[in-house]
Amino acid sequence: DGGITQSPKYLFRKEGQNVTLSCEQNLNHDAMYWYRQDPGQGLRLIYYSQIVNDFQKGDIAEGYSVSREKKESFPLTVTSAQKNPTAFYLCASSITGTGAQGELFFGEGSRLTVL
Amino acid sequence: KNEVEQSPQNLTAQEGEFITINCSYSVGISALHWLQQHPGGGIVSLFMLSSGKKKHGRLIATINIQEKHSSLHITASHPRDSAVYICAVVSGGSNYKLTFGKGTLLTVNP
Image 1: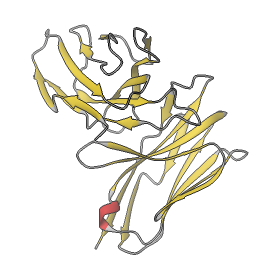
Image 2: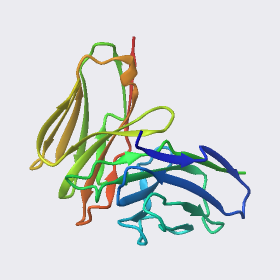
Image 3: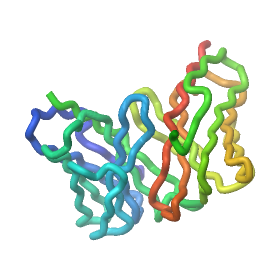
Image 4: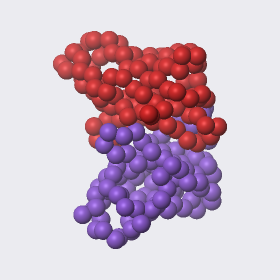
């Protein structure tokens, strides 16, 4: 079945460590996104990619990095520069953008906890 | 003030009741999304609207562009409808950026 796979589901990190969250899709979508969800807040966009080999900063990109070397993969690295990394991270994809034809498909999320 | 406001924040209903969740936004938009987030965290897209009304099973979504308002209705609610319902809008000239509401937690009791 087509969909988005995120891994790991749960991740613990010590302060000062970089961690990478995986996001893979087999929907043949051009656009991919990373969102962060904190309790009591709406989802916030970290990075997005409109097409392979291209990505753009979202609203809260500081302390994060991404790559888009393959159409199906959009990994997110949470670096030690991210001051408050404990959160729930969601990856999503759409055929193109999120406008009138852009239904979003989400992964199951990755919960990162900094110890 | 958040650009997207949802009401109510929490809603408890009895099985079979008709549910309405509201979403108001303050900017011009090109599309509005309704999403459902289950307790485990995964999110499913329910509707994408740019005008009018859409129906899927027991779910109905409406949007009034002039009044900057959308509603999500659930008819004959069931405990399996218990979830967080999230409204998100596409605005600002970018088809790649959504502004999300904080969500409405719906609990349907048997």
